[in-house]
Length: 200
Image 1 (cartoon, rainbow, N blue to C red):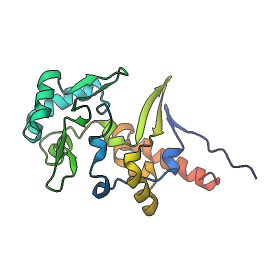
Image 2 (image 1 turned 90 degrees about the vertical axis):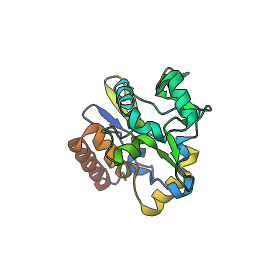
Image 3 (image 1 turned 30 degrees about the vertical axis):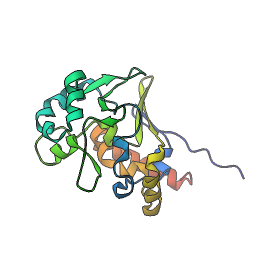
Image 4 (image 1 turned 60 degrees about the vertical axis):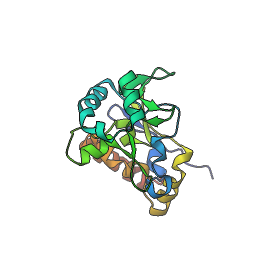
């Protein structure tokens, strides 16, 4: 018997990869200790308007940053253009995001997010961080949502499978932040329809 080919879900001008609907994911900070903030060779992708919001939030997060991070920001700002031509957050020592901080247990946390949660700023953190492991890509007139696999998140995959949490459900908050409540409700309806048809 041949397997059914699961269609890509299109909602308005977005194309949602089926991996976002079928793969499982749930961050496990106790296991990974926030490795996504310090691994890799470039910072987090940011938009120009986000750079302005980060700069506005900078006075509130500045006391939390390391001396090295402050030096990098003083030298090149909160963001730079990487080798692939993408605008990304500045990094320290070729890997750590300048907004990475550590708690007493050695876990990474985002200074931007901490300031937001404490009510000191109105900017949460870059959307690319909030949406991970979904990455957005412009495809013609559409925005494609793709599931990004990264070895440092293997424990998040394991936890997601254990708890049976699909990627799109784990990321409801950032998806609503980017696309709105009505869009997310339409996505849920599409998932139910795929499930009813036996695709999921």
